[in-house]
Image 1 (cartoon, rainbow, N blue to C red):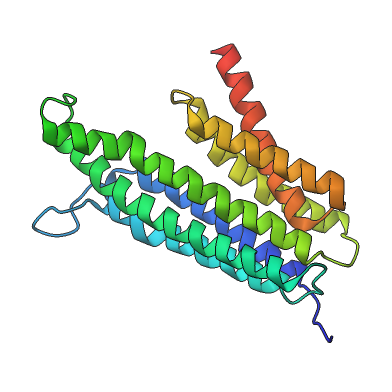
Image 2 (image 1 turned 60 degrees about the vertical axis):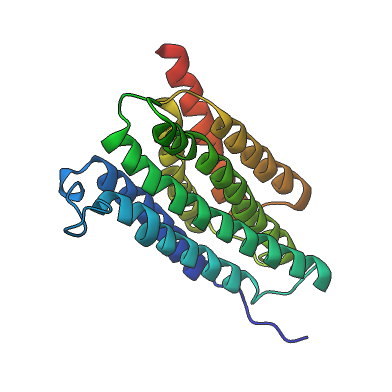
Length: 238
């Protein structure tokens, strides 16, 4: 079977898109310019719309293109496993979309109309969707999407050695994700999100130990290990 070579340069650029998304998410949440309403009926603010549609879409398209780049290499496993990974990724994308749609709308309604807590049944339902149900769906989708990407790297390994420059690019991009993980974990009450990050960190190191050094193994191990360690140090010092 004739295969084309996986381009590490393209993978670096696509992972850099994820780093850019992390920066844009921070700007979107912290900037005051996104607090205006999208339309006259005040159905959402720009911060909510950006978080629900624009930024996740950019991130998921970039991840999909990473998969297509990996698939240019020689497959080392069965076609059935390849199919299962594609289904896992699709299901994860759907769950992430459902979670963003549920969370951003109810988060906006929670802050605007239910700031005093579950004072009635409507606010109780809104707060449950905002703080719990949407998070459960998000974490499941997050694990499926990122776990699938790691296993795509197992199925389509990069056949050549990596230069120090390549490793540096992977680590730098991983650091951006790690800082995003830290920002989301360190300043809030720790819950299921810490467990999810720990699972992905262990999976990253596990496949690295089992299959050797690969681009996405370095990227994910850097990101989630940094996020966990930095959060742990901050919590201890705080």
